[in-house]
Length: 245
Image (cartoon, rainbow, N blue to C red; front, side):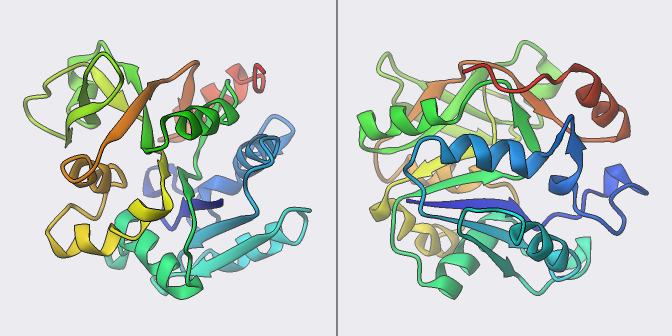
């Protein structure tokens, strides 16, 4: 299995902290955000390569970080150097697939969130379902729902429908940016792009994919800490105490 880490954004809401430094390499406690994610995922023993998808501006920072790690980590530079020219998450995923010739099951994650639960639980869930999978959590705040991917599921967690940033969300089930693609479904990313799925938000591909093949949504077994601005970063640094196994 390959783990694709989406890290090509510019984190403009965290300026000046991230004006010349990537958000995923900010520290929370004794580790960077990426260290928390990669060290946890590696405990599952399923991933044989981590692919960090970066932009041209920050790729050298990720190269330097990768040299400190024992895991096999490949950094892919998508060639963009401004927020205005960014490819968008779905096109970045396809860019990495094409550049490296990837042909495997894939765990696709945002590189700028920390979790208080192990992602190994999500990997195990996807292995049991034998389909592409996402996670979901209940979001009671109506305003926050407008900024999220929202899913409708049946009693077996199968996705019946998904929308990204809908003005009229169908449910309160929000999707964090953590995804599992089967090998077969990873081959459909370009088809999704060609057929008009959104490309900025990574969940847009899942919104299209669930209309083509079965996709399941695991209820998130803990909390996600989203670092969106300077205030939230300071709060996460104060509150986060690591992963509860």
